Length: 305
Image (cartoon, rainbow, N blue to C red; front, side):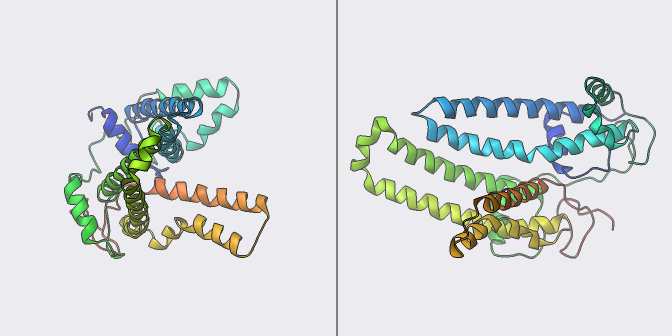
C-alpha cells in the first residue's frame, strides 16, 4: 500500500491533474485538497469584507483580493476533476457527481462515496493509486527559482521547445510579487495620512509608476511567449495563447467601430474571460511524459514513447 499523501502533495497532484477526468484519486488527495480550498475561500471572504469596510486600506485590500478571487476561480475545474476521479477510484461513474441534484439523499450519497476506501482492484479508469505500485513514472525534481529565472531569460523570445510547470510559474509569481510590492509602495505614498509627502517625493512617485507599468507590460509579453512553450509541454498548440490578449483586442474593436451594444460587450467579455480562466488552470496540468513534436520532457526525461 502506498503512503498517504501530504497536504502539499495533494494540492500539487490536483493542480497537475486539473483536467484529468479519466484517472483515479484516493481519499487523502480529495479531502486534503478540499481542506485547503475551504481555507482559501474563507481567506478570500475575509479580504473581501476588509476591502468593502476599510476605506483607508481599500487599495491595499483590493491588491490582495483580486489575485485571491482569480485563484478561487482557477480552482473550480480542478475541484470538479478530483471529485470525478475519487468516484472512479471506488468504481463509480463521474456522472454521480450530479447526485446533489437530489435533495438531501444525493448529498448524503456523494459524501459516503467520497469517504469510501479505494478499490484495491484495477478498473476501467486505471490501477488503484493507493494499493498499486505499477504504472509509475519518476519525475525529476522541481526546478529551483534561480534556475527557473535563468531559463526564463535565456528563452525570453523563443516560442519553440517546452517549459515545465515549475519553470513557468516560479518566474511569473516572482515578477508579479515584485510588481505588487512596487504598487503597494505607491499606494502608501498616496495614502490620505501621508498625502503631504507626495509633493516632497514627485520624482520617486514618477519613477515607481513608470517602473511598475514597464514591468507589467514586460510580464504580459514575456509570459505570453512562455505560455506557448508551456502549452507545447502538454502537447497542445501554442496558438491557444491568443485568449490572453482577446479581452484587450475586443475592447479596442468595440471602441474603434463605436459599438454601443453593452449587453453584447458584457456577454462576449465574460465568455472570453471564462476561456482565459480555463487556460490559466490548464497551465497547472502535468507535463506530457513522452516526447512530442516540440521536444522531450524535461520533467520525465526517461519516459518511453
